[in-house]
Structure formats: structure tokens, C-alpha cells
Image (cartoon, rainbow, N blue to C red; front, top):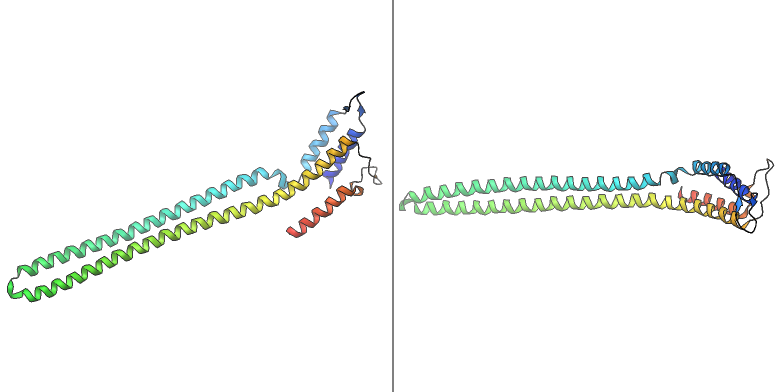
Length: 226
């Protein structure tokens, strides 16, 4: 990879620099060194440059999940309120009608007492049915709320899993790149002997056993991830 060539060029620049007497320091060309570092930065994998974007995407995913959860809960609450309101209105209407009927039957006198009692019993059964309707409405409203909360929890969990996988892949890429850079710096500071050059005279990093081994390991990791 070209990024390793630029790192090797930087190592060559440091190793070939004029040393400062009685010191481990050396004098290098600042412009050349900065140009090499800028080239390395430009050649870094896109996943490294996109690290901040991935972290920002995680926050966006979590915010979207939270908004969706709030929206579902609000919709469920509205639906539950509507169900309860309809049930309460129906119960009130039934109770009002039953009360009116009972009063009317009682006013008809003793002659109609037996029939009035029968009708009152029927109205009482209607009231029981109305209460059953109300209880069923409350049960349905509770089920809707629980379903909405479960859906919200699932959305949040899926968002966390998605972001964790993205960050794990990024972590592997960062670790491999940082290991390579660290070895290059250690070679530069320790004055590691130059590896064989290629036909063009440029440092052949493939002859470096550390670099070649890391490249093979990186390709294997890439194949496993694919």
C-alpha cells in the first residue's frame, strides 16, 4: 500500500538525517517531513477519516429510535384514551337510559309492579354488560401501551447492536493501522537496518517480516469479515 511507502520514506528521511553531536537528536527537512505526513494522512483508509461521522450517526440513530418510541407511545396513549372515552360515554348513556326506564316503571303503580321488577332486572343486566365493556376497553388500552413500549425497546436494542458492529469494525481497522505506525516509529527511533530496496530504489516494505506478516493478517481479517 502507498501509505506504507510514504511511512518508509519518512523513516529513510529520519535515518539519513544529520545527527546533532552528543545527542540523539537529528536535523531533518521540515517541509519534506510535513509533506510525507500529509501524504500519509491523505492515504489513510476512509474508515479512519469517517470515525467521527460514525459516532455522530450513532447519536442520530439513537435519537431517531427515541423519537419513534415516543411517537408510538403517544399514539398508543391517544388510542387508549379514545377507547376509554367511548366506553365511558356508552356506559353513561346506558346508565342514564336505565335510570329513566326504572323511574318510569316505578311510576306506573302497583298494578304493574311485577312487570316493573322484571324490566328493572333486565336493565341491571344491561348495566353489568356496560361494565364488562368498560373493563374490556381498559384491557385493550393496556395491551396497546405494552405493545408500544415493547416495540420501542426493540428499536433501541437494534440501534445499539447496529452501532456496536460498526464501531467494532472500525476498531479493528484503527488497531491494525496504529500498530503499523507504531512499528514504523520504533524502527525510526531505534535505527533499524534498512530492508532490501525494490528495483526502483524505493524501500521494499514487503521484505520487512513485521510489515509483510501484518499485511497477510490484515487480508485474512478482511476475508473473514467479508
